[in-house]
Image (cartoon, rainbow, N blue to C red; front, top):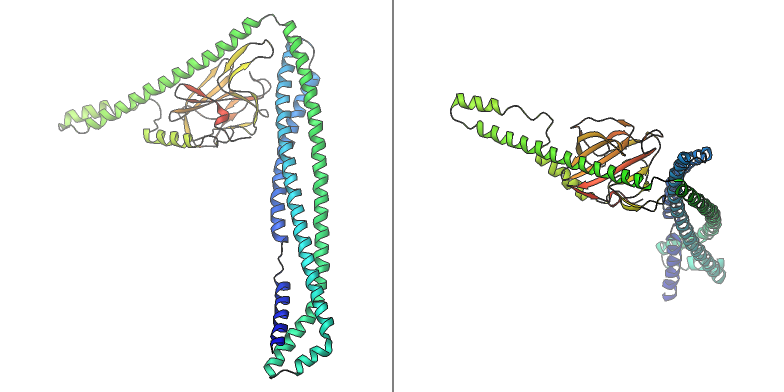
Length: 440
C-alpha cells in the first residue's frame, strides 16, 4: 500500500511540474515591444534633428568668405553644432535603449534555456519511469486494484503519463524553436547596436570637424572686426531696453489692476448707500470698468500656483529642445567679451507653432530691438516672454490655456533667424528657463 501511495505521488508531482511550466513569452514580448516603441520615438527625434542639420549644412555650403557672410556662417555653424550635439545625445540614448533590449533578450534566453532543461528533465523522468515499470507492471498495477474506482484512477494516471510523453516531446520541440527566434532577436539587437555605435562615431567626427571650422571662422572674424565696443554696447543696450520695457509693462499692469480693484471696491460701497438718488449717482460713477479685460485676483493666484508647481515639467514652447544661446552670463567667442542673456534662444524650424507653456493671459504685445516682435504673458507673479515671432495670433488681454498657439517662430528673415527667444521671470527677477522646462 505504501508503495502504491509513493507511485501516485510521483505521478501527480511529475504531471503538475509539466502543467505548471512558466510561459515567459508574453512578458518578454511586452517588455521588448515597449523598448522598441521607445526606440522608434527616439529615432523619429533623430530624423527631425537630421533634417535641421541638413538645412544648416546647405546654408553653410552657400556662404561666402565676406565678413557679413562669414558672421552668418558662424551663427549657422553654431546652431548646427548645437543640433549635432543634441543628436549625439539622442543617439547615445538610443544606444542605451538597445543595450537594455539586448539585456532583457539575454535574460529571456537564459529563462527559456532553463525552461527547456526542465522539460527535458521531466521527459527523461517519464521515460525512466516507463522503462523501470514497463507495460506489464502497469497492467499488473491496474488489475491489482482493490476496487473499480481505484482501477479507474490508476488507468487515468497511466493514460495521462503516456499522453504526456508525446506532449512533452512536442513541447520541447516548440520551445527550442521559440528559443531560436529569441536568439535571432538578440542577433538583430547586436546588429542595430553596431549601426548606432558607428553612427555615434561618425557624428563625433562631424562635430569635431564643424568645431574646427568654427574656430577658424572665429579667428577670421576677430581679425577682420574693428567694432568690438559698438557690438558690445549694442547687445547690452538691447538687454537693458528689454528689461526696462518689461519692468515698465509690469508696473503699468499693476497700476491698472490696482485701479480696477479700487473701482470695484468703491462700486461695492456705493451699492450700500441708503439714499437712492446718491446711490444711483455713485454707482454710475464707478460702473465703467478700466478699458481692458480684467482677470480676477483668484484666477491670477490659480495661474501662479499652477506655474510654481510645474517647475521642471513645462512643455517646450516649440517642437525643439535645441538651445543655441543659454541664459545668464555668456562669453562671446567672436570678441572674448561677456554679456548677460535674459532668456534662451531655441533653434526651431522656420515659422514653427509657438505655444504658451502654462495658463495665463497676454498683458502686452510689442516689438523690442534685438528680440523682434514679443508677446508677454502673465501667470500671477510669474511671466513668460516669447520673442522673435514672425507671426502673432493673439491679442492684448487674451486669456490663454497651456498649449495655446500664440504665434509662429522666426524665419530666415527674422532678426534672430529661425529661432524663438524665450524668457521666464518672477516679478522683476529673470529666471533660467531651462530650470522650468522638461529635461531634454
